[in-house]
Length: 154
Image (cartoon, rainbow, N blue to C red):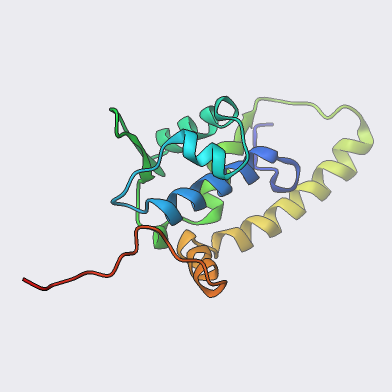
């Protein structure tokens, strides 16, 4: 039996991906660019450790990768259209080809239990966007660096 496993509660990669996406949304948005090194530094992560996550998010078009000396990453879509479920699914979903459970208890008790929990979390994560998290940051008193007021003086 083929199944798609997201595994929200058992995946550090999911937490890393959400952290990266929020960092990019907060510090760059759709118009600015942030470097992978800056993302790693702010998130207290190793650059080489987040590189596969950055690549997966870029392949899924959740991030745009900008090359060159001033390159880096920016959001691939508006934050209101990127759900946490999109992010997590991108970096955790794998297709298990006829994978057997290690034992009968796992197959009949633990696997269905974890799948139920994952389904409930997935439903909640589908309702939360990066824009929701950005509002929470603003409500917490954080100021986005690329949110300078627009001046129309001539």
